[in-house]
Length: 273
Image (cartoon, rainbow, N blue to C red; front, side, top):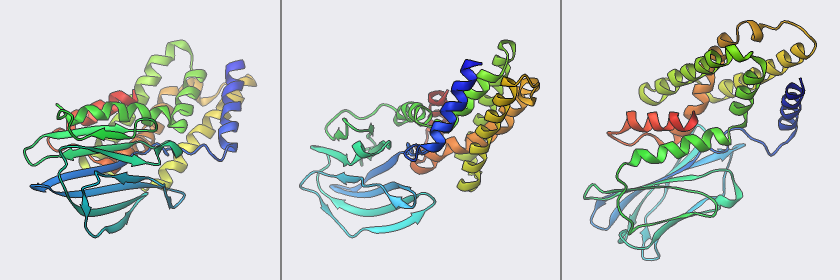
């Protein structure tokens, strides 16, 4: 029962702490594609927080000359596109401002000869060398993105923690398996088939799932036989479907590498697990 009280207390702390925001970890995305010798098309996707863009800025080698920027809004992000003229085989690319957020930046450099450089930039490691060896598989970066998405996804962690604390030991494997299968289904549907739900209802439902578990925890502390104790796998599966749409937020911003969609999705999901 002490663990249950800790869970309820941690939930109250997260609700009361204005700095704790679910999914702030959604990564920024910088794509640099060489379209002709020393000419590159740049796509910069920057997440919004509370309707405001984060103060993140990509920095290129000093020899680079940037063309006019075309900006557009998409759900939760600002997308900017422009041309960049310079030699991108030496020097480095940085993203400044990462130390002020929980956000990482996923960088992909696609060369004219087919070579690709990928890197996940974060506070304390905010640059990638352009003369490094090409990445053998761009999809490998998605494993770490999945790890960080769940590590800083306080809402998902609270839900799983609540389920673990509420179920009996013999029910644990089936419950966690049901949650895993459910969020894997909707994550795959979102990433590969374009199935999606509006972000606000998804976030509200995820929050309600945690509140429900808190109510169940209180009931169990009072000696009540709660629904979650009787059918925990149904709760885990049902809400797992919604949590899967929450997981898909990171992938929606950066997309999947062409020709390696299945592998990247698998690695992202393994990172979450």
